[in-house]
Structure formats: C-alpha cells, structure tokens
Length: 221
Image (tube, rainbow, N blue to C red):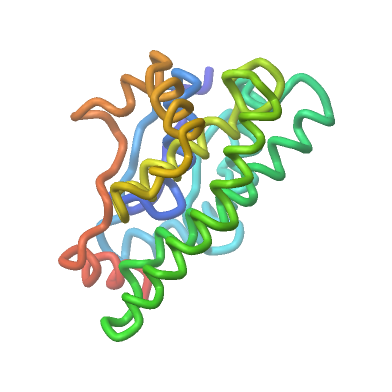
C-alpha cells in the first residue's frame, strides 16, 4: 500500500508550492522531506531519484515524479480536479498555463538585482492588471458560474487563487478593479480544504525573504 505522497524540495515556495496547493485542495495529506544542503540534493541525484537531476520531486503511487507541470497534471487527474471531458481539460490547461506565467514573474521578483527591482515590479503590475486579470474577470462574467470551468471546482480555480494571493502580497490593492475576482477569491478561499490550508500552521509556505536567499542558493549552486 502506498502511503502519503512525499514531497522533496527546500522549505519554501518555489516550484513546489502549486503542488502543495493542489494536494491540499484535494484533501490529501502529504509529507515533506526538506533539502537543507547541497549534499541532500546530490544524494537524490546520485541515487537515481531525479530523472533530470532536478527537484521538485514527488513520491506518489510508487513513482518518483519530476517536472512540476507533469506532477500537477497527475494530481489533478487523480483527484478529479481536471474537468469532466477533453474540452474542459483544454480550458483548464489554458487558464493554468497563463497563471503559471504570472506566478513565475511573482516568484522571481525577489531574485532581481536591486537596480532592476522597481522595473520588475512595474512589469508584474502591468501584466497582472492588463493581460491576465481582465481575462479571468471576463471568463467569470461570461461563464456565470462559481468556478472557472464547467460547474465544478478544478485545478484552474486552485492555481488562480494561489496566484491572486501572491499578487496581493506584492501589491495589496492589485484586485481593486476586478470585483468578480475579489468575489472568486473569497468564495474559493472558503472551500473547506482551501480554508484549512490558509490557516496558520498549515504546510503552506510564506513568501521567500531576502535573508533566506543565501541558504537556498547554497542548495542549488
């Protein structure tokens, strides 16, 4: 019998956070094995656990899965967060891929050199409010349902909420012009599994801080 999924990554958000969100949304308990040093990563690389020598890696159903999109797809399929048919899945993929693009911008902000941070912040705000959020606002308006796709909770809802909250950490009033997204945020945050994940003491990780960077860099470089 395979036990709980086991997540191998450093003790921070990075590319594992969306996977934590998906598992939590599905109500799945998981264990975490944190990389603390470069040696921890090297050990996984040398024992053949990492197909492409990279983390995140998730042990699930007897597999050692790598590549965050593949892991996310598997979890979404396994726990019924991937729509009811091929067309719904295509919509979910489109919405999630765009969310990942914005998430990447938000996630890399802290890595920018001091002289580039202001411009990078401006790019985040511009793309969030002019490219991405208007699309999701329109989708919610046109679709007229509580969820982005069909009439059931999906991976797209989970990952959009994750990124909306990250965007608000970056700029607290970033959703000011998007009333439907504000309602969506409140509604999805209140789904019991999500509500639990948003409570203090859960396995959700805080934003990476400048002081954490040297430790993280030592693991990967």
